[in-house]
Image (cartoon, rainbow, N blue to C red; front, top):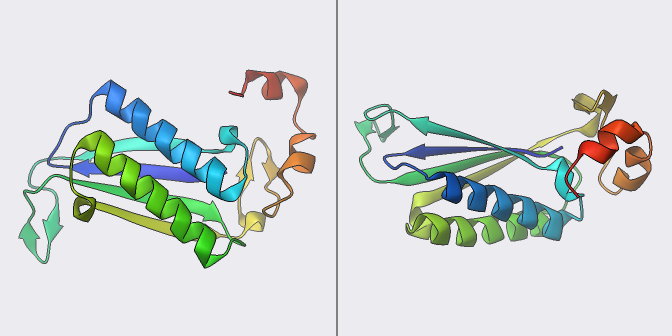
Length: 143
């Protein structure tokens, strides 16, 4: 349900760091929203050298950008707690300052999202929605 795209500029993440960041984002989303862990997906990308600009100039500082597409319907407090938890953990994993981690959350109505072949439920409706999954698909998902 939530899709988080992590883009790095001027640094390279190891496989272990990617795994740690994916776990941190998944755990934060689960802890702050109550959505099942298997809903979270995390994708990684790296900007090529010279492809990242800030203020019209090439940026050379290492930076991490997280863009999260999440279902609308959660309070500002929940979303800020989610972002704060991710910020702290990502900065620690990558060993950069919090100033070099930028996080954006974008709300999307559940009625405009399809996953696992069905429209998504509103926040809080996950358990009932999950019952509609085939046993094969449900059994293949991480617990």
